[in-house]
Image (cartoon, rainbow, N blue to C red; front, side, top):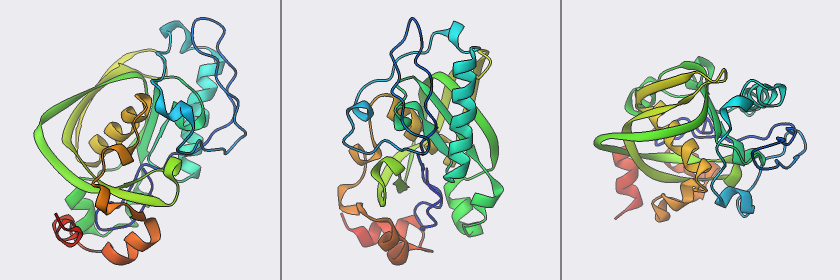
Length: 229
């Protein structure tokens, strides 16, 4: 998610590229080798296919450890709060996410509170499985560097639970609410070939700068009213 300081999305999933990762030997798909900093854009077939499971025995290899480190570094340089393998041309089910105080500082206290946004350190999930918790949902703008320069309002569950392996191959479970839950839903969608534009309120689709100018500082309910039915 990108740090788009609009009233409906203080922070959006900003996907960013990373250096090429050596292709796995076996099993697993061969990974393309994008140049450092390259970001796969909408229209690329790899963004519309389901990413492959990472064999557990490969997690400790130098290739995968380098991938995790580069994904986190690239996410921070963007700067962003989440990154998925397919967004950098790597067809594996790997996501990283982090939200930092300096990114949150771009938002007003009211915006931070409305989104349930909290700072947390870098997390790596390999082969994540997402479970939606409850029926509560909220609608906020999201953006993505794979759909560079645009944003749209997406309704997502307020609470989720994700399970998977960490960067050491250890099983982990994380139950979260608010903005971290939104980041997780956005990133796991990428692993299944889904972009936020597939889920957005279509009439909300807008140039990111224009959306910021029109809706910045307004609460989510007011923005939805302005967008119309």
